Image (spheres, rainbow, N blue to C red):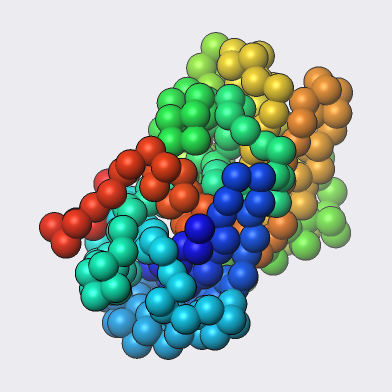
Length: 334
Ligand code: KG4
Ligand code: ZN
């Protein structure tokens, strides 16, 4: 089946054509128009600007995705679109575009949850992957563990109680002068510092819980930076980044170890933009090797927001009969 995926939940407009059949999953195209340069001026995503940029890009990106895939609109058998969660104005652009396309071609329209789509990215590269498994979604908006009991059946078993890991990286990145979003640059800089230079509080909450809290870590790091600056000293950005990253990686590895035990899962899927972090990937690779768990870590282009993952998730929603009509609305909430 040929599925057209549309994604516009935050600051990336994306369209993809994916062929999904039993035992065969093929990305025919996956076009992403990033607005990062526009939002960088403001140090973060400006929702109104994001919506306008999606309107300008969505049609062009979709035609490009069809062209690169070598298919025409009449070959598309289903339209899958991110309908929630995300920025409401941004989501509405993709949802309305997808509704019009599906209605005009008289083909099924499938609404997709953005977080489930991040997890579904793994199906595109790990053809033998099937539920049940444990998923860890780490992105700019989410840090959660899910027990994935079926292709569309998710149960959240742990999550952050405040900020997401991506926000935590971006915030400290900004304070030490990195352009938005600082996550990828911090990944590189962490190799140049001493990871044990600064003692920071762990974002892994104490006890049996699988929850995180990143706000205490952020505040402690900001306090350290400010107190050094008050002494007239600019603290080492390399040491801050290395220590901060080590603290986050240790917490993620610790809670993943607990989540694997609690769920009894034999496979772990890592998903979301922060899944591109090489330190997290290495820490979880070591953990999975030690535990004999199959570790699925999608390639970088499938970690950040893209429409191929939306089409993949849409396929399974289609199989479970989760269709929408022209009354479909977007929702900012999960
Ligand atoms: O999943 P995503 O593309 O968008 C959301 O749905 O949130 O994630 C974006 C987040 C940003 O916070 C960005 O800084 C972070 O992913 N990120 C990284 C890395 N690459 C992207 N964080 C840490 N290390 C990276 N290599
Ligand atoms: Zn995302």
